[in-house]
Image (tube, rainbow, N blue to C red):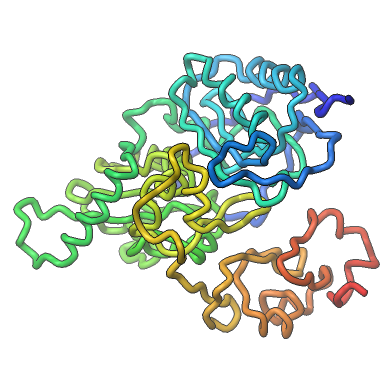
Length: 428
């Protein structure tokens, strides 16, 4: 049988850029393209349609695996080559995005997928390295075959997208990151926060406060979040600027004006790495009491169910939205036994008209130059022909309205196709 993956070693290691001040957060709509092509593994096999069984024992079923570890890597280029050699040598059918640099490895927000036996074999191989022996590997079911079109495993200057990069941040120093809380400890903190909210001022001797901080994007919050968390005012992590405002009054910054000594800040994101990265920025700004949810929301839902959580969880692959029960199904011991797993208990809002939306699944604006990820009701979807607003309806580059939950291909596939870039009419 032909090899499932092909190796292309033509990507050169780029040095870290000069350090920039962490407070300079501009918001470009798109990041610049890489200077050199990335290392890629491309599968020559069609995507199978097998599924993960409820007990997680079907080795042929497809799963999505996530992990990350912030740890010094002396030679990231050699690490990338070793990983590629392992995957190629064992003819593994794995897709996804895995990034490495001097500060560690990230297959978290950008995950990988494959048959369970291949995905687990890769994770087990990684754990045999003493530096990664304690790495938290999380598994969730894929909906239909691969959740990613191909595998991209390469060196990257920043493990996460952050304005100014992250090479200058002390990511590999545990004392500079937020203190990790297990899912059960996190739940206790949330319950304590509720109690504090009901107490009258002065009832507590120390006067401490608990602030819940969602370190994700606004569209992620829209389909699910912890109760009491404020909606982030950003649509990409690289634009996050919590705690950095220098204005006297800033209602958009939940950390503006808080007592840095008496406020415990509870940070959470999907898998944990965004909190670990951003907490180092907050440490440098003088925030001393920082806590993060170990393994992120996905790890919490697996062990605690939907307790204190409302809605679904946004994921950065073709699945887009997963209910809490999906994480319980992937649990090694039958998943969570706490909380309500049968209902999301949350209705999203249509971005256009504000009406309630039961289907917690985003779609992209039909305008290529907008491409906004948003929730939309059926009426607005038809009226605006898949666009997020009337302005976008008049955009020069429109994709056709796709039926159901179909997703657009990569935007560049539409860019030069005059038969597709048109008035946005439905395909005949």
